[in-house]
Amino acid sequence: MMRINLNPPGLWPSLGFPMQQGVIEPAGRRVHLTGQVAWDAEGHILHPGDAGAQTHAALDNVARVLAAAGGTLDDLVSMTTYLVKASDWPAVSAARAARFKPDFGPVSTAIVVEALADPALLVELECIAVIPDDRVAATTGATP
Image 1 (tube, rainbow, N blue to C red):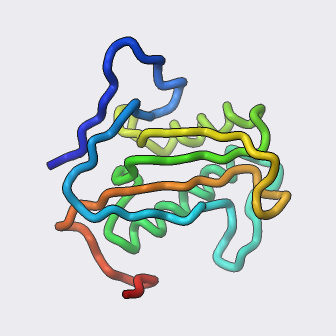
Image 2: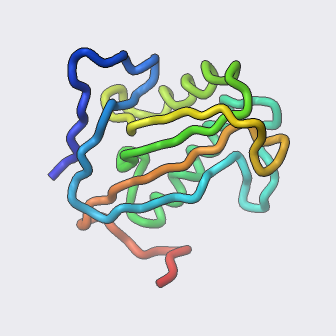
């Protein structure tokens, strides 16, 4: 079964990026990701001062975790975006719109916070994915 997007009439529009009002999860394995930020493999912050580029970097990290489990960004069913400055929302939205198929974004919540783990981080993404059983893989980085 594929996921089913729920966008009933009478609710507000998508705000310019791919998202759903609700998603009925498909059959598969649920994967909860730790908050992903714009850190490289050595823990260095990428793109200081650029929330859009940090969103792309965080999505790259999300994609790496999902690939290790046999998934892709298309398998995301939920994403919470934490951002430090509300004024960065247009750049974050544009980065999301560039990475998701128009009708296939996850359910979404955005929260403005005072700060993240490092003052140079502007965006953090907390995600849940459902990967179909026939694609689930235990690969590099997977532990029992």
